[in-house]
Amino acid sequence: MRIEGFVWLDNFVEKLAVKHGVLQDEVEQVFTGLPHIRFISKGRKQRDENVYAAYGQTAGGRYLTVFFIHKKGNQALIISARDMDGKERKRYGRK
Image (tube, rainbow, N blue to C red; front, side, top):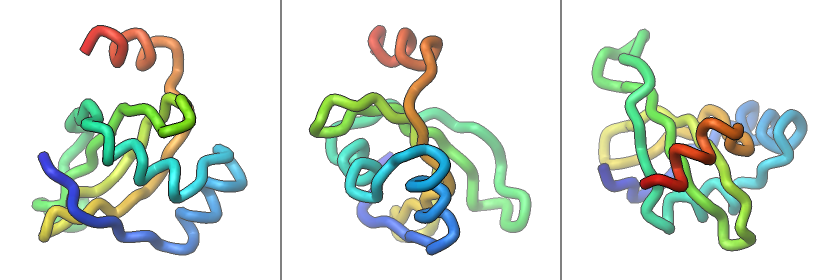
């Protein structure tokens, strides 16, 4: 899957910064480095808008898990992002 752009909603941007301490730039960096992407769930409102998780590293070395909805035109609607937990980090290291 290739992501060519991002859709940012203000309420999600605020949640990333306040709750998880993640900046928009850091999320975009995860996608510039070939992240490992995993299917999470089928879309609920629209069946063709599935939720995925992208596991990757920022330019500063931070390991993040980014949850997004794959939109038409290879756009990613970012819904959450946080530091990888131990299990995710271990799995990411093996890829």
